[in-house]
Length: 310
Image 1: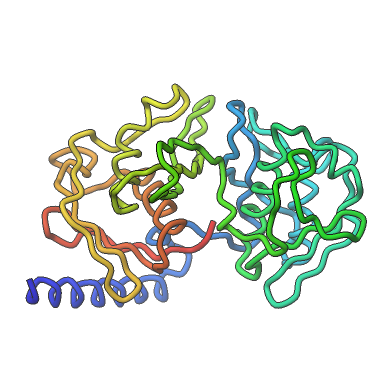
Image 2: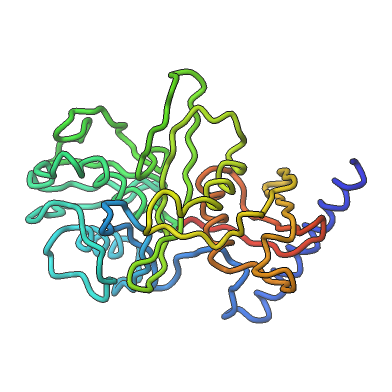
């Protein structure tokens, strides 16, 4: 066991060094990066046709953080006329007529002051509206948390249900929450990025599941992604149902996953489908404090991915 740990650790270090060298030599090729917001291309979380917040690619006009924040809020607001090149089937969530009176960022905390129209959100969407703001703005590397004001007063509770919220909001607020709880004891929460397909556009739909599952989160992630098609006709899975996570461990901020060869796109292939690694990597980033994921197939090192928030 000790020899195997040492070998895996050594293999991981070597793999990381090779990837860094490749990125330095070929900086435009970033296939090893799981997901990243860079330049004026980024991510926004919009409602899809199933009323889930979805991770959608978007090309922004802004390049600096302060301008990007303002543009993001405009795109998240209904009928601002700012939405360009958004995929059909996705829509904004902040109530029409809402104005961003002011915004500021200090020490990674963004303070947003909205007009009173912000409070007119439908009860069905009030929690998702907060989630959309948090998850969209925290794709920016300079943003660690969000503080929301309405007419200069801190928003301490949701507008309609009066559910209390923290003064500083971050991704611990979770997203697209679903509950399957049989007991108030030992409740676990796992955020999983499912694949979805609308009109041949493949995107990712994060869902936070609350349950009494007595499993490690990575086990829940893989099991859910293998069976995602049972939840909705819109959800798809590229992971073979025979895929098994043989074992896993965390070494030096890296999560090492060892699968059987059913994880490969086909038994004669040396490839794992890109959408599979994206879904797994994004799910891991939401649940673990790690910076990279190393894939093994039948105890042989396969690939390594650096993780960036997105």
